[in-house]
Every structure is written in C-alpha cells, then in structure tokens.
Image (cartoon, rainbow, N blue to C red; front, side):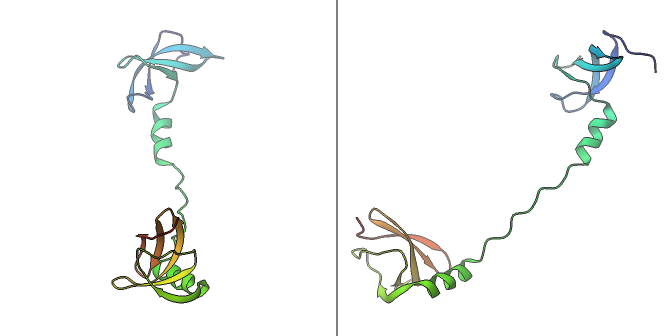
Length: 136
C-alpha cells in the first residue's frame, strides 16, 4: 500500500454507523492515519482498521458473575435463629421491633426485618412482605 495522505479515501470502522465504510483521511501523524471522516454520516473519529474493529468486538472479556444471593428460606431460617422473644400473633394494631417473631394466619411465622412509619418489613418463609403496623 502507498503512503497515505490527507484527503485520501480509506476503509475504516465507523464509530457511529458501527460498520466498515469509506472514510476520508483528515489527519496523519508520522505517516500513519490518525483521524478520519465518514463519507456516509459525516462523523470524525480516530482511524480504526477494519480487521481491528471486528477483532475488538469478538475478543471482549466476560463480566464477572455476581454470587447468587442466599435463598429466601435459608435467610428466613437464619433470621429466625437470631430472633428474640416469643412468637406474637400479627395484627395491624401491634407495635413491632426489629427481630420480633410474628405469626400471620395466612403467611405463617415471620421475622421483623425493618421498621417504617406505620409499616414493617416481615420476612416469611417464601418472601419478604411489607406489613401494616402501629409503629410510630
């Protein structure tokens, strides 16, 4: 290949079009193409060899996988083991503290995890639920 010069036509990977297209050489540095302008969309960007762009897409490093969160049932069992006090029957008029054990007539036994104004998060065997309470 001949030595390139400004204004020459060259194939390059366009960053906007995401494909190899015809470009015009805009800038050179020590005889190497540095910047090009796409003839299709008009965007100016650094020169990318066509093979370089294709290789860059296929050689991505995979992301690390996050560890799986513990199952709800395992978390429930651990919270129940660290809970304090006797089991109380759940009612919307009751005041609860973090760590209290409550028994709901439909959901079963649960542990209070968080307190809000007039609400609390209770972790049951199947999932955590936001429940009404008289907390202030």
